[in-house]
Structures are given as structure tokens and as C-alpha cells.
Length: 472
Image 1 (cartoon, rainbow, N blue to C red):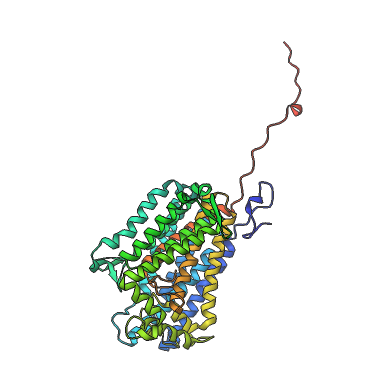
Image 2 (cartoon, rainbow, N blue to C red):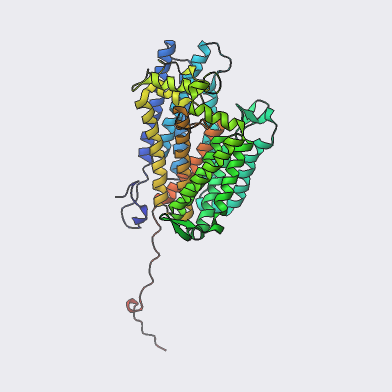
């Protein structure tokens, strides 16, 4: 009997069939929906003393989303990993609960800026599910994406560059030029550029793997690549620096360059690429710190947030107080004051979770991300083709790296970057793009777990052929 942790290539025709595990997925999705609804009820009763009249609508809508997602996976990717959907169901459900909780807090304070963002986030989740379905229906074989690698690279670069060339009035938010805002509608194109560039990185590195793995000299036990092969990583470094300079976005710069360097390491298995990447980014960050004032402010605030509490350090100080208030077990859903942290719904939703669910609750959320990333990396190991291996590894690492950078900023380990916590934080672009990312992982995992086709039957041997006498 094979399972999600075994190599399905061992299954052949005539042997025990590989289970699809869709029943397991459905059971876990039911638990995720139940957990979300219970958490929503706890928030309503704790904060308002009664259940919200919109609870039935929210519960029906949220349940319908995952029923549709399950049915689509059952039909178009029946062998997909059964843990991917339940993980994002719990994460997105907890995010909706926390956004709803912050909505209530904002309404109690009479804040017009808070508004009712939970219904909007639920609407964005529906749009994300539509993209999820579209990817699974259109992309029946992930290897097809390799044919459009350079086209996707061009699209990704254009999406990254658009906010930089637009006027600040329609592209700048909190000092970073990441948005396109027109007629009350806003989108962050960099979230979609990330996926396009990962597809390109995967196709390029599979094609150039042998060249990049060549070493010209050995220094301090590191096999350094040839100088002529440094071109790709230098271009990625220049692109990340340009994003940092013109869009004032440390998060996207760090995210894209980190993904590319790690994917080179996965492709070549040479630690020298990691050393080169770290040195290049450290050099670029130092140059940017010395030249650009906004980078200096961001770094100085990170090093001494209490010294800049009246300026840019107020967010991180309030975040640290919020995490400290939560302690080990938290104040309970609805029992804290996470609304005291600025921009808690998006940039600092991890601090809100840490305050109300405590360290144990925040660690549980991190474990969910670890499971999601582990299943993506497992898929990378099992899938048969090189492009699928690189693409699954890149997508999984993108989630892990983004979570690390975000939580590092919230806890003061890293400078604040402006990235959002995947599936948890408020933000339509991030949520929709991450649904598309998971759809690609689902498609690759289906190919990885799908039993290999049975070999064609051998033709009968001549000695086994019947003898016939032919008379003239």
C-alpha cells in the first residue's frame, strides 16, 4: 500500500492502486471549517456578548469555498497531496477571524479607517479560489509552463517596474511604491510577478544547471564558479537593488534575490552560490544604506526602535508590547488589545495572533506553514521531471522565506519589510496570488503522486507462436 509519503512510481498496473486520499482531505477541510467557525463564535461572544447576525452567511460562504476547492481537486488533480488545501483553509480562516476581531475593535473606537474588512477579505478569497480553479483547469501539465518561461520573465519584470514609473499619488503607500490605485481599486503587481519569476528561474536553472555547476577554482573549501557564469546572479542582484532603490521596498528585493540564490543552490548543490549571494546582498544593502536616506531610517529604527518611538519605531514597539502581553497562552480570542498595533490587519497580524493566542498559538501557526512548506519540498523530491522539481522547491521556499522575513520584522529580528503574512494578513493581491501559488503546488503534487503508466506489453516471442502447416 502506498501513501502520500511514498514514491508513487513504484505503483504499476496490476499492483495495489495508489490511494488518492481525497477522503482524508475532505475530513481535514471539515475540521478547518469547524475550527474557523468556533473561533468566530468565541470572538463574537467575548467582545459583543452575542453572536453576529452575519455568522450564518459567513459560515455558509466559507464552507462553500472549500467544498468547491475540494471538488475541483478531486476532478482535475485527484492524486494531489491531501494536506495542502487543509493547511491554507486553517490559515485563511484564522486570518478572517482576526480581521473580523479587529473590525469590531475599530468600530468600538469609532475609527473610520478600520471599516468592515473581513467581508472584503472573504470576497478576495473567493477571487483567489477562482484563480485556483483556473490554474488547475488550464494547466493540466506543469511542464507546459517551461515553454513560456521567458514570456513569464518579461511579464514579471514589467509587473515589478510598473509601480516604479507611476506617479506617487497612485503607487505609493507608507513610503513604498508597490501599488496601482485607480478609482478606489488597488492591486500590488509584485505579488504576481513573484510567481512569474519563479517559473522562469526554474526553467532557466534546469536548462543551465550543468554550466552553473562547473567550478574554476577552490578557495577555503569552496568550489567557486567560473567568472563567466556569474551573469545570472549578478542580474538578479542588480534587479533586486533597483527594486530597493526605485520602489523603496526592502521586502520584495530581499524576497526575489533570496529565492533566486537558493534555487541556484538547489540546482547546482554548491554552497559557493549561497556565499556569493549573501556577500552580494550584504554589499548592496550597505551601499543603499550609505546613499539613500529612507534605507538609513529603516535600519536605524530597527536597531533602536525605542529611540525612534515617536517616528518610525512606534509600530515595532507596539508589536513587541503586544507579543509580551500575550505571553505563553495569550489573552484569549477577543480578550486583548491588538488594535493598539498600527496596521494590525496586514503588516502586523502575527502580533495580533501572538497577543490573543500566545506563544503556543503563534507557534501552531508557524507549524502550519512548516507543514505546507514540507509538503511542497516532498513534492519536489518525488516528482519525476527536473522542471517540476525546481518549480516545487522554488514555490515552497518562497512561502517559507516570506514567512521568515515577515515574522522577523514583527519580532524585531529583521528590519520591517512591508511584506504580508501569506493567507493570514489582509490584502487582496497577496491572497489571490498565493492561491495561484498553491494551485501550482497542487498540480505538481498530482503529477508526483500519480502512478506511473504501465510499460507496454512485450510482443510474443517467436518460439511461443503457434505452428501452422500451409499447403499449396
